[in-house]
Image (cartoon, rainbow, N blue to C red; front, side, top):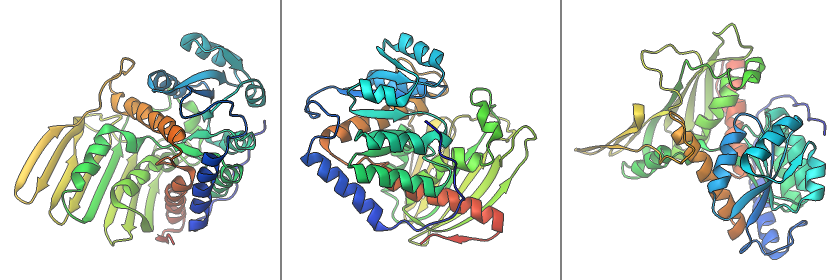
Length: 380
């Protein structure tokens, strides 16, 4: 398959129509068996195929082993040695170099796409054409035009589509949102990711991406901003290129205005030299009418509600395959994949559906436009 070339970047308005199409597609699918399905999904073990056996796919494969009610039965990678290694490691029978061959020979209930973003549109559209539900790693696409086409293809085929936007599934982030429910309407938020860790060692392709920290990590934190504070109406961004080894921006500050008039600041850096390296932790501070919630270093959660202050540790549970300091992220991979399996089985739209993730990508796109133009961008 040929990868789709990313189109020009522009901010577009996400209308209710596309979300409505996804909801109608899910309802239709509950009424009829999906194209390749040969057994009742509510009782059978869900059979998945995974495309892309690189660095982060190892977390997917670990998590699928723990997910209740689902298993990976086939893997696919253009580098056949990677597919063979993954299959040998995880005891997977099906080994493929081409996606069409995997879909033709396997009876799959879903496909998990864990490849580089430039390939996502072609892969997702092909899977949708076969009437197979699909998960796609973030970012869904670099261009909103491509992302919208992917969502539309899945809606047209009547198949569920979820973006593997896992940061909101970290246990500390769920604890932050639960605590924030007790401090009244939010007026301010700050979400920060500032690291000096060499992320290019395991993902060298990132150094050549013209869109770097906002597209790669900002997509996570902008989604968290929506998760904590709701939808946004305005975006202003300043971006900086500091590391001579990379092509794209490696630092950025994004200011957001919510539909309720609150402010959220998102800080991003792949080039911070701090006394304590916090990789891969995300720090959060939220303020509301009745108090504040802060997630600090090493997952200390501080909550003030009027005159009462509490402090608790909210680290993620460790899995048998967890590797410090990645436990929270690895747990989020398990959590989102369990959510996908449960959503498929129960006929529910997943929390990070393709249509929902378009709203996050609109913020990413607006951040780049704002940085280029030096002005705030309205999100309709």
